[in-house]
Image 1 (cartoon, rainbow, N blue to C red):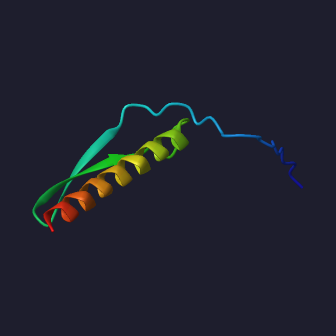
Image 2 (cartoon, rainbow, N blue to C red):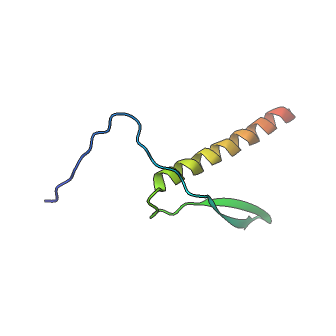
Length: 71
């Protein structure tokens, strides 16, 4: 049976800093869409994933505010 090491962390986990974001442009229904690319094997995957998620949420909130302001 394999042995596992468990570390108990008290407080927030330091994910490090994400690298410069990389983008890929995809054409969907005739529109160009910019996608943020994350490398699953990156040593800073957690930080890059969190940065990507925050960017997605920021963009969605901006779009929702624009819709609300139009009404």
